[in-house]
Amino acid sequence: MSQRAERACQQRRVAREIVQTISATELDQNTNRPIYISSTKMVRTLPNRSATPERVREYLAQTLTANHGVAPDRATELALRWKYGRGSDLRDATHWDLQRVLGTLLGPPIGHYVFNSVREDEYLEWRQSIAGVLYHYATFGAILALLLSIAYAYKDLSFQTSKRVLEMVSINVLLRWTLAWAAPLHIYNHHEDILILATIETFCLWVIWLIVATGTGQFL
Image (cartoon, rainbow, N blue to C red; front, side, top):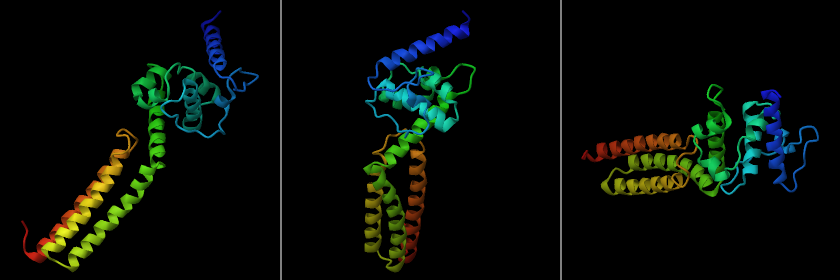
């Protein structure tokens, strides 16, 4: 028996072992594999931390097909390489971990691609949570509050005004940063969002300070 035939037999055997652990999964009559793996119409959601290995394989197969243009049969083959890890293992995996499981030493960096997709889905999951929604609106609120603070400081240049302005800005910034750090630190692009708005906030604070200092003549 050739190596290719042996590898095909091993893949079918692993597929049967996986299927036997699922009580209510419909099988494809031709491939004897779970139908969800070859389906591209199902909703793809990131498995929670307590998800079973079967749920992780389902997610990996659908991600490879929907996000990376992998053929369903090839996506099935790659997904079946994930044996025992649960949802928490997928979320905590590095791109090197996923490359060792899904990729090869000289092949394309499939693990790196899947890692980016997991981070994107994790970020979208957080943005749809209560903290993420509040963070989204607090971002616009922070910018609006800073602009109003600049206008307020320009209208009434005094020490009391500058004190109230700084108090208002500080409370807003503290609220937004509290919501921001409620998210996982490693989610996709989250650190860039924080740095961008922090730059805007710093610039606006300098403008407020310059307006008040110019009007009162107190630069220190």
